[in-house]
Length: 116
Image (cartoon, rainbow, N blue to C red):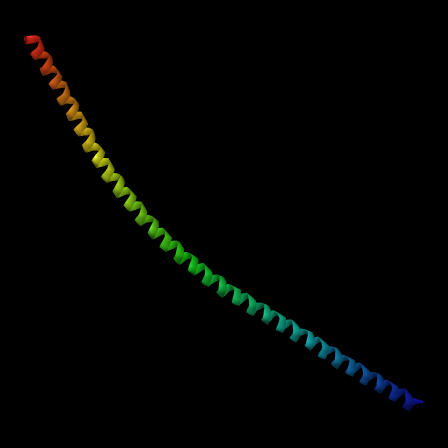
């Protein structure tokens, strides 16, 4: 009976050790799975980071080109406006001169009519 009790105790110890090893193996598998999932997630995030970084660089380059084109367009418009204003100033000056000439001509004609 003593031997049977010892065998039973040894058997229980072996079962406990096996269960502990099995539990440790299961826990190790879970840790490996978690590491694998984390690595996959990290790889996906790194891929997205690179993708969005490339897209952002492209957008910034396009914005820079658009900005330069807009400044060139604005410079051209400003130059045309200055040219139009200069022409307008010349025309206004010419109109003022013509009006003055017309007035003096009318005055000359009036004064000649009066003197006759």
